[in-house]
Length: 447
Image (cartoon, rainbow, N blue to C red; front, side, top):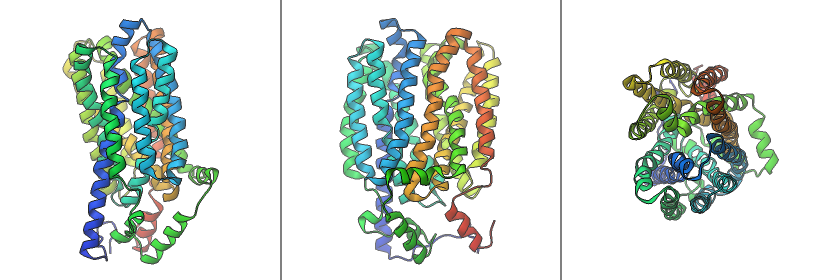
């Protein structure tokens, strides 16, 4: 029997299947709403940057320092809270992180000097780092490896939903109330949504006395599933959990790939409006629309990448991710050499870059959990996030420095080089997938 083509059937009663399905659906929409809320109070800063610089007379390098310091804190926090997330209740971690992050946004609205911006934005990103590992843990426990690429990419649309919401609403808030309310208003929404997700989320099926996802989907036998459950319930110390995740070269490969993926992604996400205004002659409204299109294309691209990795490449994330980064490098090159007034070409390139950059960013997180044990899934995902946000730090200060010192041409060159390097690291995982899928395929005579 072809393991990858057969339809897994649960051996449990219809009522059990319905309850399990209900909680999977509830988990998905809750973490999507929760993570979109994180983005309401993360992407607001990039929209406020031009007004802040004009009002408080900050340079791009000043703003780049704020972005880079916060990114470093976020990256370290992802790994730290990944370990915490593997050992604690994920819904507590996520809800507390969102609530504290909202409070830091309030503080940002009252700030007027660079040291205070750097402090509060760094604390904001520290608490922001509690969101991703918590979601990674819940996804790996509620969805099996045969579907997690698709489900992870569906969850990941919360990035774009949250970003689009703030990109569309922030200009109105900025125009009528000033840049400080770009921090105040989203924070109020985030506080209420923190209470919502705390009420709706549960960590694992087993916490509700339901069978594991492997049992429910028929991916593993009862004996195998019980063995994994016993292994998962074995309590590991802080450093033991970290060692379990990092004692795997594949996790390192995708981690380094993520660093360069994030250089590409965050260059456009944080500096996209400014790049389009100064380098490509877009209007403020035009740049805003292009960034919304960028986010929407990212949403579609992520969904496509996740589905293709599950259905076409049978759980292999490397091929899809590597191909995306190669084509992305080509599109960045076209955007660079396109004439300043070629708005149609520039818009198409921005759409394409948005479509392509989300897939690798999603699938690297999936791959990290594929390669690690379920009890170190949040840690492995958090570690790749740490390296990813090292890339964000480089994109933050590095972009500001390159623009101030050499102009936007240097930024394009650095982004193209990053796309190539990330593709090379991803190629090292081309034929790799989760141990569960590899074992199941071997039993069924498939490679």
